[in-house]
Image (cartoon, rainbow, N blue to C red):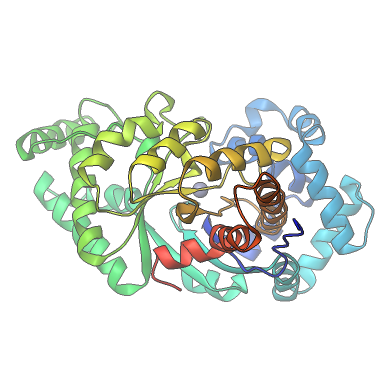
Length: 390
Ligand SMILES: [Zn+2]
């Protein structure tokens, strides 16, 4: 009796980025498959495509299982041949003819029921009111602190002014519609956040500003570290989880200080604050899983593993679900280029989760009801509950 099925279970994506239909349709239709691989996406977000060369990128795309399955599945959905040319043309035609119908057709097909949306990428930001109209599915906004810091430091004359202005911006976002705060400190000064005194932060702020705001560990880090403690205070007061990018990223990541272990002292100091490790610390997944295993309010978000680990998806999912309490594991895609990534990721994520849970039943770790409950939680229930959206 291992015929567990998660068909029809609603998927709520815990981490993705907004788009505008005009911008998506304005991109080269033939580059679609190149944009949706991990390689293409990172080259795009760090502005490095030119240096790599389009033909080299294309060869890598064609050799990547994720692009292969996207081509085949989307061609099936659109009723065209799975070649690059036929798919580009059919996709562009269907999307541009009626964006709302095209997107809702994808969401119905994959069971997508909601988005928890990190508005911090792309920059300049996508208009959220417009995105909510275009998305064709409920959108819950996540307020990212780094763009606010960049804007507010220009007018702040002291560290204290910056800290108070950032706290006010977070409070305002929570009072409006933000369901969580997000930091990408791993892209700035690293995740090894330490206790920093007010006087050290004030002195560092002066040096940081005089130097023209470079991301140094000597001047920027004390400021950003102390600001994060204040953001956590606001998160506690407004009852919002904090999303922390944890793990690798594009070429701009501070890779030496991007691991879950870097965060442990800080997280231990904020033991009662719900925190989502966005990407679960990937590629150091075992470390992220361990942190969620020992720290009660640390959650794991599955994007990057989903959908980009392709052939390794089941194995990695097994690791995360086997180590951390399963009610703290949140499905996410990190779609940040083209909306079809949400659709593909929801499909392959649901399929992989089914296979992993069926194995769990066969090996007598779980019964069917327990497996189904885990599946429903991971695909959407856990993220809704954590963000007070259930
Ligand atoms: Zn992201």
